[in-house]
Length: 110
Image (cartoon, rainbow, N blue to C red; front, side):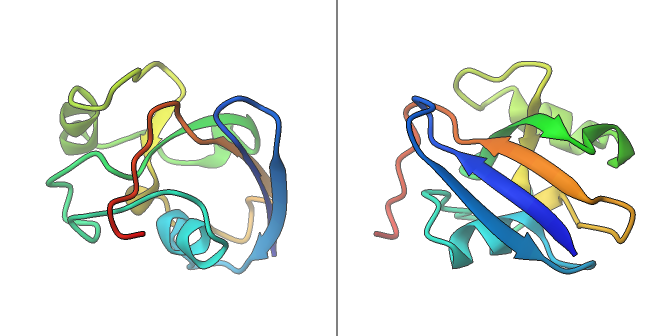
C-alpha cells in the first residue's frame, strides 16, 4: 500500500489516503474528492491533472516522458516538482507520496 497525503493549494488542509500498486494517481485523487479534472482521461492532451510532488518516495518514480514535459509547459505555475497525475502509476516500492494541489485548479466536472 502507498500512503498519499494530498495537500490543498494554500496548505491549510490535508487528506491522508491509501492506494494499492497499479493505481493511477489521478484516479486516487478523484476518488477522494481532490479537485483534479483530468479532462483528457490520461491521453496527455491537457494539463488539468497537474500536481506538485513535494515529498515521500518521489525519487522512486520514473522521470516524466518527453510528452509529459511538453504538456506541463501548458500548466499554470509548473515547476520542477510538477507532474501530471494521470501519468503516475503507483508501485509496491512507493511507500508514500506527498501531493500538493496547485493554486488556480478549476474542476469543471463539479
